[in-house]
Length: 66
Image 1 (cartoon, one colour):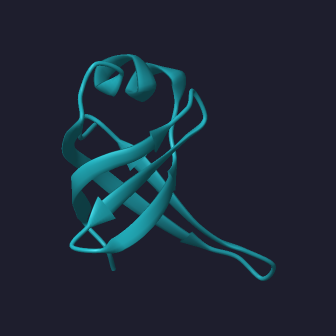
Image 2 (cartoon, helix red, strand yellow):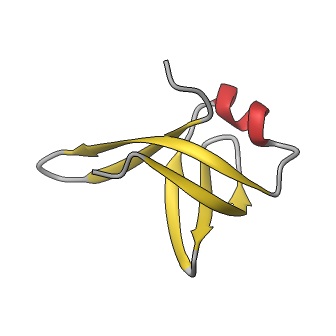
Image 3 (cartoon, helix red, strand yellow):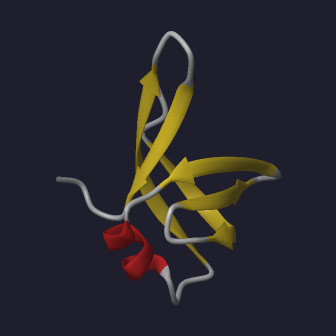
């Protein structure tokens, strides 16, 4: 399980962010609320939820723990 990722934000859009963590790029799906919180940041920590389905494995990122 991946609890969080902490690194440089290489790419940001309202729907996803790519975080470089020691040379590995993690693509995380994010909400508009999370995008608003990280919009002005070059790096940071995002808490994650890893969803495994029959047809997909998706990593979601959140600026806050709920």
